[in-house]
Length: 123
Image (cartoon, rainbow, N blue to C red; front, side, top):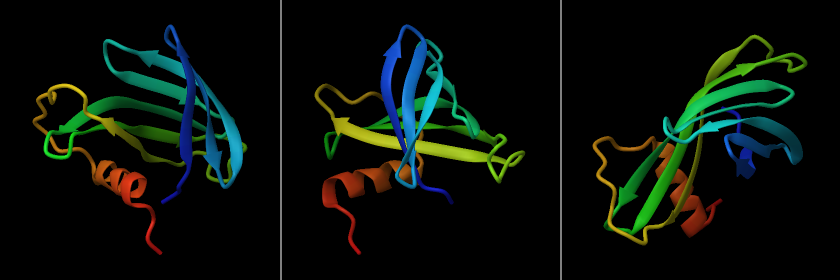
């Protein structure tokens, strides 16, 4: 498992710009966002990411979980070039309206992120 922080600075039209904070180094990303399909794709100098956005509303805690998840392919000059896997990025926000109907539960990462943001890291 590799841990980093995805920072989306802007989505203008369908263009995504931001950074990935990996080991305290900000790595630029550029890509696209397809609003109707809820799909994202972006490249960094080391990897190519693609995925989808899902939402999970927890009406009991009044939290909306936003989950981006998908596939990653490592590219040169990464030491892991040619390897692939999955990635997940999660965040949450206060639920201000009615809950959106959800059939599936989100990945455990959504609950982990919520715990970190609201309870802090316990060491």
